[in-house]
Length: 366
Image 1 (tube, rainbow, N blue to C red):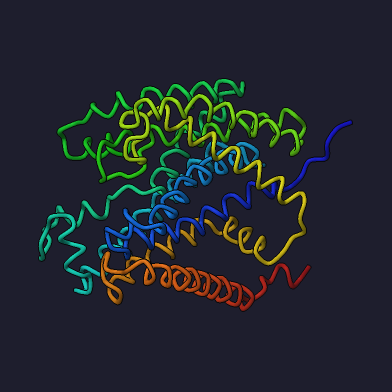
Image 2: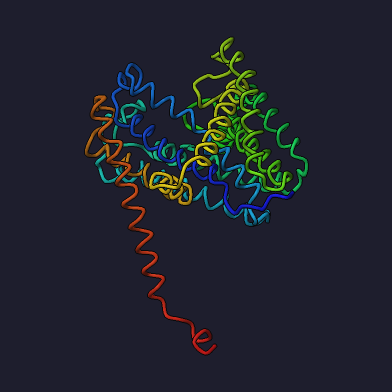
């Protein structure tokens, strides 16, 4: 018996929405908590553990990208370019604006080993800082063609594993030329100018695409999708955990520059988490919390930008890495609430402005 195609995979939406909430907590910790709070408290350890769910965002991106009704290369490339534009606009808003107007705390500048006033190169450095949106944009430019020409799902799986294994070796290949150096950083960063280099992080998107392709081939059977995802997740954990344990420096590194074992291990955990999300959603009724996660999933890019800008502008009031454990905990719901209020207000204003537009004459005549 064939399975009816579902317009949405709720567990994918739920997981993507969860990643948005998790990112707000992680970013609040990074920017506002004291160093000792980040490294030596239960809160710091817990939030960093939650941050290990970052691959959920990329895996769900891969699944959605593969099952999207619009499979056109041109539209995917356009979206990639648009996301890159948004990414650099976000950097301008969260870093450059408060510095230019003279409100950024000196402690933030000093954390880079700099002092005010900044020269042009330092402004460029901040503007070009690589975040997960840069990763998403660049990846879409590449994946648009991979999706179009890689018809076998195991090609996607093979590419993901291959990239995970070669990424640590590529990090040593850096150009001394200014512009080319930045490109190599975006591709396989060896430092913190680019936090999420395409190698190895695109592996998670490719793994999501692998499952998306499998889902399509299995006639959109969600139960089968997450059963297989759980099995693969367990296998990946069993394979990845020993690699990380034997050589954590190489395989897990600093989290941002993962080795193959770290990619496999984290992918395994995130596969199992998504499978658990599917099981929970299948056993429970829709509720307000679920609706929040679905809302986050639908507006993931704009919410991501708003929360980062708010958290960085929050340094003007709350300082940089100055809060205690309790102070950090109190800031998290504040930034969450402000993010949602601002986003909802913008959506509402857009809706009102669109409704006020005059009806075209040709529609009136019809």
